[in-house]
Amino acid sequence: MELIDGNKIAATIVAELKEEIAALTVRKPCIALIRVGEDPASVSYVKKKEKTAADIGVTSRILLPPITITQGELFALIDGLNADPAVDGILVQSPLPKHIDEVAVFRRVAPEKDVDGFNTINLGKVAQEDDTGFVACTPAGIMELLARSGVDLKGRHVVVLGRSLIVGKPVALLALQKKAGANATVSICHSATANLPELTRQADVLIAAIGRAEFVTADMVKPGAVVIDVGINRVPDATKKTGYRLTGDVHFPSVAPQCSHITPVPGGVGPMTVAMLMKNTLKAYRLGGGR
Image (cartoon, rainbow, N blue to C red; front, side):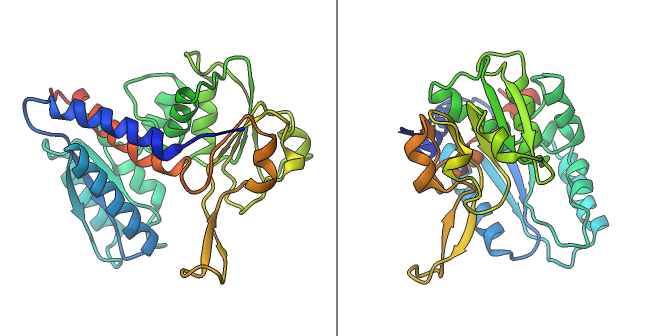
């Protein structure tokens, strides 16, 4: 069994980006990060993105509107960033307050600045295999993990557990593409799938993004499979100072021994998301005419 070290691979990508950005001769790329309210997880995620941006030479603008902001006011804020030529990428941190339509907000971000890859146009470009679009960061990170771990999907059966627009659907589209590292046969499973273990046992590569702690057990995995665990769940644990431990959607102790490759949680897919966000920001800068 080979453990896929997301921290190590992400660090390699960040180092590559840092070198590319250091060679830029005009201004540096700029990303605007919008966080609404004080959700602890969102605060942590935005700080991580801001730190990584600073480490590689990307300028970040942090915008912190109050949780009482209206949808119209948030649209106006995004519109201003869309029109600002000094801003290359825009990310609106989710979750947003319940009174705001999250999908409508993602659509409001200009496609050419949508470095999170959630705008309808960018999702369509993934389906059309149009490389001028932006791929959502977690699915892009999964594909990068597989490629850099020597896992070629060509001709293999990929089973995706989960059908979200953030992970499940885009990663299925990426695995299907007629490109090096892809060309897989793909099945998507979800909460209404019948005989789920029967399907997951057929997977050469199983991508678990269902949002249920330790849902995937050893009896659901074919020996020798590659398992990518996208989930990150907080499970109560009195032995921890925080009162909880982090775990994925896969029961790691029972599943890991029978895999050829597996990602841990934490330290697997998670670090890749921020690295791919920075990669998208540099891409937006270059597509916008930056050198």
